[in-house]
Length: 116
Image (tube, rainbow, N blue to C red):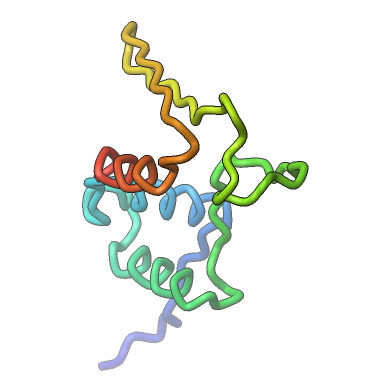
């Protein structure tokens, strides 16, 4: 005998979907650990929609604000005395790194390796 109940789909808010996607995007995170009481297949689907750029995918807020910058000289003509300066913090430890702008490509490669 077939059930007379209609199938119900759960609807999650865009804010909850976005929060789940942000947590899944963290390095080392897994959907199974992040999906708090939500079917992991649903979270996988949201991630797929986001990758495909579908309009029904929730937007992820990165927390960054767009800023307009004045035009800078090209990379081939670095500003004399200007350095790339990065400050890294971990607990009470603060490390400041100064890198010459003439070696910006090497700095980018170093940063990629650091963030792996």
